[in-house]
Amino acid sequence: MDRMIFVNLPTENLDAANTFYGALGFRRNPDFSNDDASAWEISGSIWLMSLRAEFYGSFMRNGDEPCFGSGKREVMNGLSCTTREEVDALTAAASRNGGSVYRAAEEQFPGMYGSAVLDPDGHAWELIYLEVPQES
Image 1: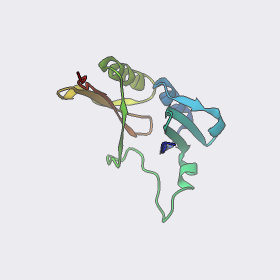
Image 2: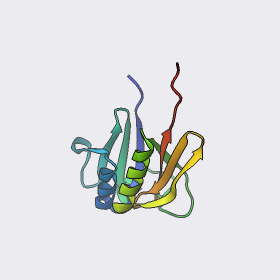
Image 3: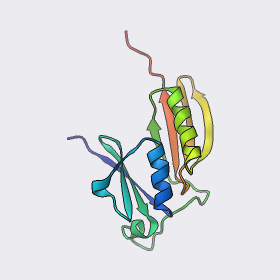
Image 4: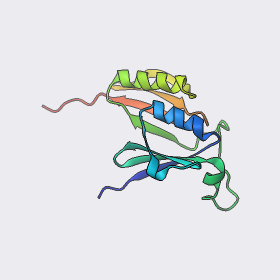
């Protein structure tokens, strides 16, 4: 079995996070969701856990606290897209559903097109399309 990746992010407003991630097309799994958390399936092996800040804090130790939009970024999660149009569509969906554009869509390198958005809590997501040459 392939290893799974669980991205755990704190939120100050679970309803706003639910609206945002639902608009990106992630599938919410009610079996692992409740009033404190929402489990989002991004792909078969990648999941996002959006956790109320207080609940998220219960997993932390040594006096650590959740970080929200402080102007410092510990991580920028990258999500692959199948086309340039999907990058543009997800960027627009993010900004219409409680998020904001962090970096407008652009050609970053030849064959690499992407943008970055912030969720309602300021967590950064990069949306990336890679034009991979076909082998002949």
